[in-house]
Length: 523
Image (cartoon, rainbow, N blue to C red; front, side, top):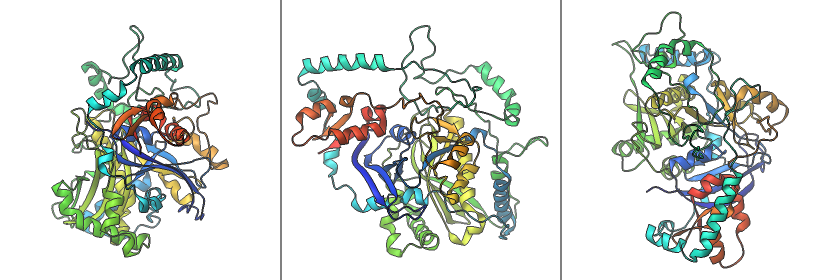
């Protein structure tokens, strides 16, 4: 059974910023993830966290010099812009005829994930030295035996906690999609639902049952859904209507070409080049990953030295492995999930038998999360940063066909205070995460406030609070001496100075749900 084990590192401040060149402006909090489930990471990125290798960090938004807002695109409603179509046509022209001419105004922007991923690179030099044996919990029987010590006291505590939890849980509400200034929660923003009482609605902890009649209606309305502008529903339990994709169907004259119409168009038999995109699990046990590792690592070094001016010692195989191959995510392949399963992957772009670009992505329960991109500088004219983002959006739509809840594309962080990083907002429709209440707000509603202040609360409901905030510190799960126990029990056994302030800080940032699922390592 997969479980998340983290080692909290705490507050980091006064280190260089790659966005504004401040020498000591960055402020963040972080933890080492020795292992992590895809659901836990999904919950964490929906609270503003992000990973770099096995280090998971969260900017302190109201204190860091350049606030970094989590941004997601809604692929099911995405339509490529004029500039996106230029990039797609340029790729097709190159593949078909070998044309490598550069179109004016198509300069490749700074790649979207370099600063995100390396903002905390200083910690990679000080990786945790805890032995793996300490991180493995004892058997379930042993854990249960420890948790039942002092049984009477524990039973009383559980009753009290249960009563408080029931009293404190607010009723679930559905936000009217037409209400002015309304913000939305994704289905990934809430993961633990209260089971409704009989007669009070469907069980939101289970996926909705779809009738065959509704599916037929949906197909008939497909054309209308493509031509009409869409807005997201406010309810966290609602899933966006699926977009039915067909790689072989021809677009009608009265319909705009879809993303797939550009990407999956058939090339002529005498095409100059052949492009193949391969999805490879990030695992040294995978034959494809192993066989392409050396070529991929060499490409990474070439990219880092040419684009980011790294020295050879800064981008060797060891650095490549720790940065882009070491992932804490545990691969999962549930029957209801996508065919590729969940976990970390390298999406390799093979041109005429050699790798020219690699997109590092995480496939999670509700999204595809883009981690990093590196490419051959000799092919900069193809705007591979933009092209790969469009391919990843199309890939998300493809996965959605099998896994209906997987319907978002996370692009890392949006930094409005850094003009060169604003282009992420061009992939519409998209949303930004409110840094205080962790609800998603359409980017159009956020931009006016960001023009006046680099740090903003996007949720306009001043009474709204973080619904996932920590309510019971004693329920935080701790891994101590290979034994899993609630923090209230660990606190009694701990010798030495109190660590309650550190645990409180950790729990407040990961939220109640994650703090009760993940194991916080304590020595």
